[in-house]
Amino acid sequence: MTLNDRMTFPSTMYSSHCTHYSRMNQRTIEISHMIMDDIDEIVSIENSSFPSPWSRDVFMRELHIPVSRSLVAKKHKNQNKEVAAYLIYWIIAGEVQIHKIAVKKEVQNSGIATKLIGEMVRLSRQEGASVCTLEVGQSNEIAKKLYEKCGFVITEVRKGYYQESGDDALIMCADLKS
Image 1 (cartoon, rainbow, N blue to C red):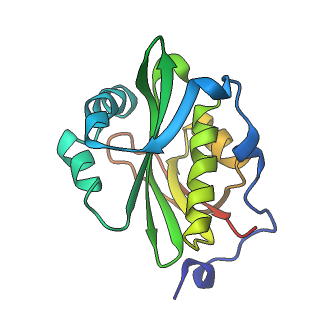
Image 2 (tube, rainbow, N blue to C red):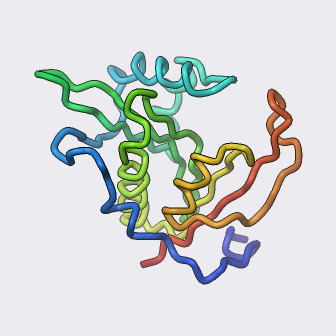
């Protein structure tokens, strides 16, 4: 049974708006696959973004899990590139599951997360994925707006899912078929 068999989607499809929208100069951001050298910067972003952050070891393991995909957005700064955001997702049986996305505080609301999601969708479609799911805290208004802009819709609510806050988790899905 696939996710499509378990859920009925509204007529909303993945929004191509996510692949074209960005307030940052496109030349200053480069999206690539995560490598070991990125992990220290990712852990720093992770620690400042989540009340229960993943450890360095968890990110290192993601590099070796066959279904795992990890993208980083690097911002050009002088002659260097620094990690500005990352997205961790899995592709299993044609379905994408977003596990983590975070953006460095000083570049939030710049379109980087939108660009990362757009690239994730493009790559996932190339691998034959047709649907994407994620969970987000009900009180996380910024993330919900981002996901809705990218064509995700709420399909389920898990009451009291987040132990540290007691917040409900919203399960959101997007149909990736073009």
